[in-house]
Length: 151
View (cartoon, rainbow, N blue to C red):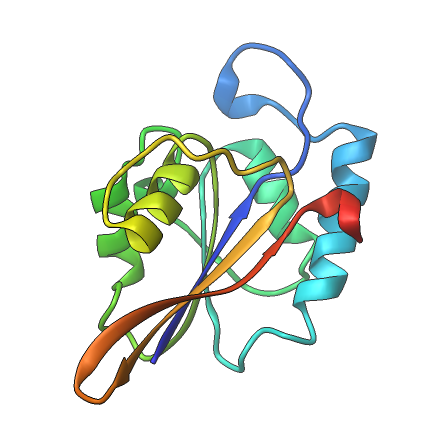
């Protein structure tokens, strides 16, 4: 079984260059609140993959855990690059990806509907998706969707 946890970076300032945008005060609070929710729920040895963009790095830092910075989940990521880097669906255990729209919404749509669509993932939100085998068939299961403002 594999858990793929998609976490969109929290609210960030407007500005250029895009990769250097920092979290707002609200975004820092969103990241801290979601990190507090995630931390006790993340399986041991969860692999954490984070976009190189400043706002994603700041969101990840709220967890206080080691993470890998990888361009395959960054601003130019796509469904194929993200899923390949995460090892979906063959990795055992959990992978947390902290990245961006529209990629996270496209990945969620692809995994849950079989078609890449532009689904919206709110800033700071988490989508927790699992893959499991039941009676010899692979299944994709939506475990949780949580928006930061619901915490």
